[in-house]
Amino acid sequence: MNVVGLLAFAVVGSLRGVDADLDLLGVSVLGVMTALGGGVTRDLLVNSVPVALRTTTDVSVALLGVVVGLAIGRVLGDVTDHSFVQVSDAVGLSAFATTGALVAVDAGLSAFGVVVLATVTGVGGGLISDVLLRKVPFVLVEDFYATCAVVGGVVFWLATTAGLDAGVSASVCAAAVFGLRLAAIRYDWELPTV
Image 1 (cartoon, rainbow, N blue to C red):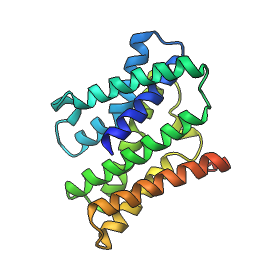
Image 2 (image 1 turned 45 degrees about the vertical axis):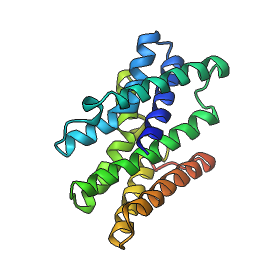
Image 3 (image 1 turned 90 degrees about the vertical axis):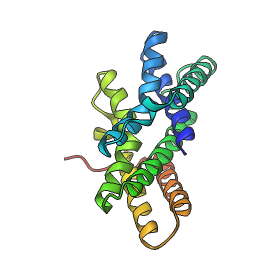
Image 4 (image 1 turned 60 degrees about the vertical axis):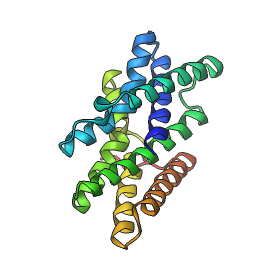
């Protein structure tokens, strides 16, 4: 799950950097921060040294995703609303929401903790990239996005509480987040504004 999420979010982040006309370093930083931001925040919340700082594997996978993103950007051109980007983003969201829930259960957190870690891990990197691009974070103003991670965290907690093992619970969580996000894209679901 982690490798899939890292690749998907690095691709999405680097493509957002290309769309923002950032230079090569800026695109790379945005791709890496989008890929690693949620996991680093998650690890800090459970009082653990972030995995991205203990090994070079996560950074290497994120950099590979940046290279893939640059290649895709060259081929596709403007990719802001391209279906490839939307699906990649949904894959990353589902993978990271699931890893967040897994870490929360391993850390012995409450149901609320599982939902929070699933959500923070799923949306944290994108939130950081929006801040770097000087935008109001996407998850706060648009679309039906963070809600998918919240639902995934709830589904994961319910599945583990029902006695399903971690692997099955993870699969159910990832499927729920991914399916819900694709449905939200397809049907233009949005939360009401105040």
